[in-house]
Amino acid sequence: MKTLTLLLGTALAALLFCALILFRKGARNANWHEKVSEKVNRAWARLTAEPPALEDKTIAEDRAILEEKLFEIPGVDTRQGLALLGWEEGLYRSVLRSYVESAPTLLDTLRGVTEDTLKDYAIHMHSFKGASASIGAEGIGEKAAVLESMAKAGDADGVLAGNAAFLKEADSIVKECRNWLNRSGGKEQQRGG
Image (cartoon, rainbow, N blue to C red; front, side, top):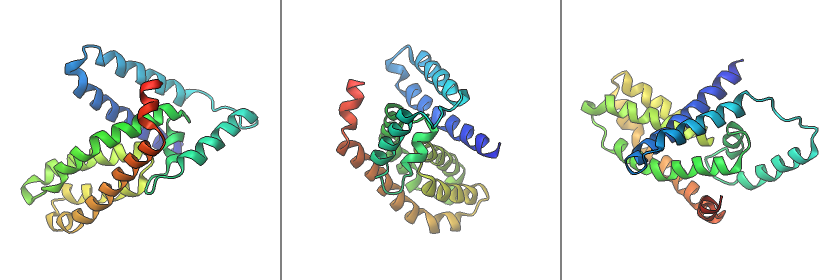
């Protein structure tokens, strides 16, 4: 039950992250709310559906192929991220693309933290933590959780001491994700499917 709660929570964070991206694009697209609703309905259907039987050789082979292809991003457990999204490679690529497009701006807001901006820092760090969980980047997500807690507690010294190393690692993960998308043809597959 605890695993299911964690899975649903992480999936909800991913959906909220996607909704935020679509909301920001909403000014250019009047149907953004329909797209969000459609994605939420599809994700909920996948989460509540019975998992496919592993005895089905085709499904097992498909998973093995996807796991092998997606296991190559340093700092990201792509297998976990893919499992969160029902083993749908196209959806995982879409979430990964959103992460790569949005994370640098979010990380820039975390760079200028001061004692006076700890509240905003905690909010932005919480967003980054959820976005990272949605792609399977649990390691950086856990570090984000620690810094978020420090900021909420008003521990400016702790935040300032850990922020630079956190940002360096987070920037590296975003770069690795971008490189993987470029190597694997992520942009072409986005247009084509």
